[in-house]
Image (cartoon, rainbow, N blue to C red):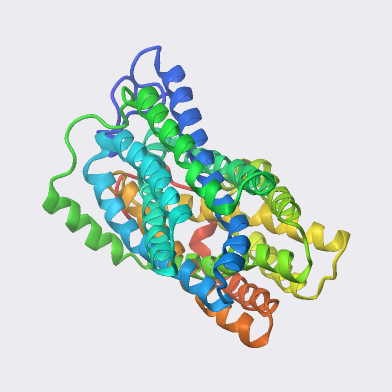
Length: 425
């Protein structure tokens, strides 16, 4: 895609390398960049999704209650959410170091997963889980910020493709973890995971270290924080973060307790749990870029509104649906909706932000996501111990429907994305 005013980029995008701005090599470098970033995101989610399949086995061996599992998930997610804000500042202040940050994220994830497998008690387990969550959060601001800067005119599609990589990982992770449990203990799987993580980190460094996403110097520090203060006062951003919080409350409960529900209440084997969770995430590989493309063309609200409503209804259905084909259909449909929604919320936030705040915007959205998705399992664990595990689906469904109401009330989300915007609204 070419700039509309000839060879010189317009003022609103100074410092941004566009799709075709530099030489004939650009398309191939764009393909290398997005392919590697998407593949790295897939790898990251293989680890993250596999964690939840290993969680029931960990719970059994360490004799943990639902409340303890909820607190473990809450501690790691809240810590990740808080550190996400710092990761966003680093990514925007050091955009030329984006590959360094992605490499460190992947390598640290492997190291702390090894520590989870070694953990001799609950305290060490929480410590390792917290720092593995922090390692994961380093990825998103730099990766999505880089994509948002480089693919300004197809931002929704680029971010959704990145999300599709996550869906690939969410599909493969449960299958891999379920299959590996036939051969290894959960501790051995966590320890062995350090090898592919370190190899993936090295590969990312080798392939992407020569690809820039900005030219010139970063915004001066004083001007950057002035822009952040103005952005945080943006009413649209504030309301969007509330929507994200409600959505994340729903998915936090679902991700943590669906595998435990299938394992303990439905008596599925570890491999069967992995298979059904993988099936649910696999459909997101297709639904995510499709929904991102539709939101680029017709506005974020036209896709967000029906999707959050359907998510809430499906969670309520999960409370009553019996074992059988309808349970499988419900689980698959939930997976088709949950991951695309996060990508759409990220794209909506990026539309509001100026070019110098793309990674900070991503970190704000993910901070809201991880904090509320982290608090949600703690609350859900208490509900599950008191009233039965299926009550967590009622809790999540109600949160998703609140998000739907908020989206309905925000008419500005119906506007088509203004991808040429260079300053915050």
